[in-house]
Image (cartoon, rainbow, N blue to C red; front, side, top):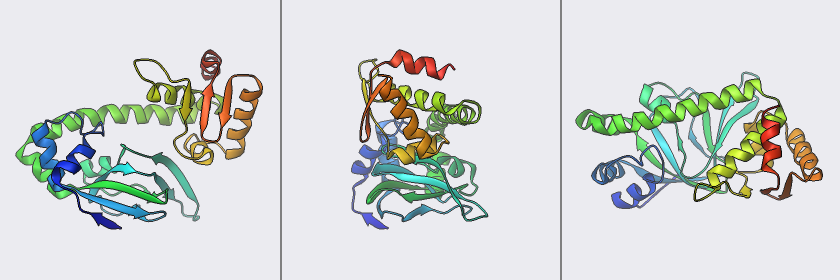
Length: 236
């Protein structure tokens, strides 16, 4: 891990891109930026380790970060793949507990703004309105995450993949319109794992939908030719 030289203003400008911090006033953002450090990680390097004290949270500013759990059998089970401007490790920081999983750089280089818990909680004691604004945003994120877990546990693989492609289309669209072409957040194998399916199942579904004229696939990009067909699949 390498610490990068950044001013408080530069770090605040990176933090405001993350929805957890976007609701803060300019002065509060600058103060938070002054508490934070900007860090660089090589591929495979850990940001934090499972079952260790949650000493701080990370806002991803470059590359990808994989969050995964290590089972008793040594198996590595990916939970999610994060990229800019996602925040990682915020829930145990607010709780004051331990990290429930590992987080490691999943790109040749990953960078993150690190906000230490003790300094952050100290700021919240002095200016509780900062924590209140962030907690409101955090509660919305948790509701979305719970919905994601329920989706993985109750819906068949085609519905999960179709739903995720439509979700990405809205996330990457502009002007209130869904994008016709989406960029996958990571490799196809990574996305397959986040959806709770094997890479083979993921590829088989895309191949079938390509043959049916629903999508067109080029490396990490998927063009959605028939969004209504994907919507029907999500309802099956």
